Length: 310
Image (cartoon, rainbow, N blue to C red; front, side, top):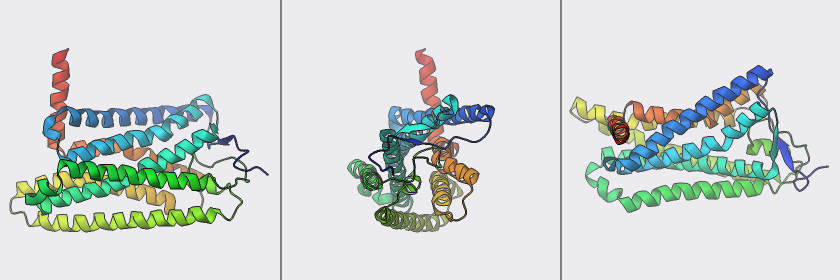
């Protein structure tokens, strides 16, 4: 019987279909990946370049773009390689790193989205205390805490998952390495340790979700009290993109992880995994730039400045 020490590689799930469909999957993922690189890269460059955007909201948005770039780069390139070269292999070390960075970046993004809801609450409900409550040092500490919490969570999950003996083969029913798929390969009851760790993470995520919900209840109550229509429009324009990103992130991840294990449909599982791991990093820049006039104006100035230099 094989165990984790004798496992040298894992077999990832290829996208089903003919060779032509696999090449189509490669082209589709390449387009999504390039869109994510372009969108998030533009947001990072624009915020770093325009000093008018050096505010807490855009500082957190820059961190979100960095996390999105890392998250999509962790899974999509390997999946494209599987389709292009028709190989399912991923090394043991590669799988460990993929799980670590996936958990690290996704958890850090969730903590950061929670922090961003606090930023919007202070900006709208306590505007006179905004600079005091969210000074530059506080913002750096909050962002660092989000990254650190994601790192520690990933370290615990990865170390615990790969300490389990693996004796159910090495085939994963997913297009990237994922903790539930690794647990299915374990034949030891010690996998319950990882399940308890997952339960703890779910409870922590639920607390973050409750904080986000309470923040937005208070935000919308404050917005509806604003007398001018222009003021309400500006408040909604800064809050709705964040709320849309949170909704997309939570809905896709919840469908993927909380679906009944007894009802397993490989194609549906594949689609859900794509929705929560691939689509959000590519769509988030579009969501934030659609209603944000300041960001669009900064985009225009950056492009104009680039053309003038040429």
